[in-house]
Length: 457
Image 1 (tube, rainbow, N blue to C red):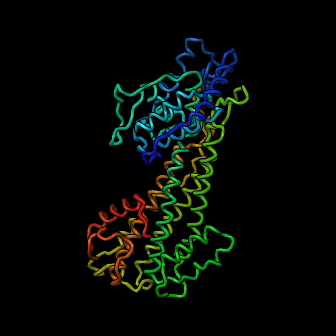
Image 2: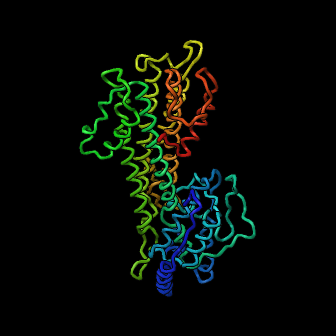
Image 3: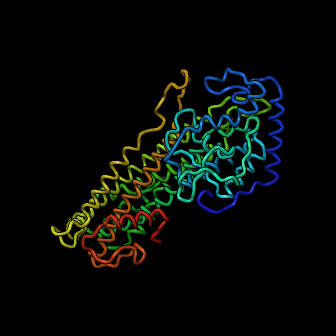
């Protein structure tokens, strides 16, 4: 729903369950028990008890003092995904928030009100900083994104409400930010998998690569590889074979894609665990409050790291396939896929761009689980860095898409040079002809085509 107009509907039965849990939470708070972040301070100040007047303001104050981020902001779809994941986790009984808060979040989503949430500088302490920006919108002190994605103060028509007992601390806990971003990223990767199959299969057809590595029986015990090889074989077609052995980059494409598919499934599973598990702290269970480590996000960050690595590997394999297309010994076509070798560069600088993109993308494969530090009067912050992991994953997705656009352009050029009709792209996507031109414009067009979900089928 982060990328669609689907409305959020909270069923009355579900809200009745939330109300019942809320009543239990309020009853448990009706006493002198110390409850972290409710009648005490947070972090290094958790030993400070708050009087009645301070408790009445505290849940809103939690947002105001922690909204210290700034641009760049998450995209609208990303910020909506964060808000949707936050709503989903607040419906868990352990959160103990009111039905009114859940309705308010649903109303914001349905109205298209999108909080300005910083994409970087989330710091330690889980996702408290970016979530404080989202929460500040509810109480009227935050900013929202306009149609251009810039932060602006909301108008007076925006309905606001104060966070009630325990609702502020519940809003700041867990990892709904990384969860929402992971769901979007996994969806993008699934589209990329199909696109890589289409383009890599066409590359094999241009080169006349042997189909031996794509035989189904060679994928025994590996259902993902079997499915991918079938797709590559269909995209490659039954054209002639030019050499006994295909280049190594062609042969390892299937296994690399299988790793990517499995890593995507692992991220999906981690996101589902984050959406359904207990991530609130303090969590209300069986009439008591328990401190948790749901803010750490270790499971999701590890899954993001594995997927990022698989994407980087595929980008590097893609640059190698593209390099082989420039070799007349592989394709039988003019050097560098140039219509006038020596006079025109052809695809050689397109390949250089792909190499540079892959090299840059490799820098983002640094594991985001690394980074223990001390903050705020020696408070430990030994945890994962979820927004950093999401940013690395996003860069890897963009990098593979860019490399794939370079390969797709080279395939298009090769098809034209061979005299065969260019069969991959919709008619009119690129200019006619094979002579040198500002190919960067073509690549912009192809990247946008890939981002929009293009499929050759």
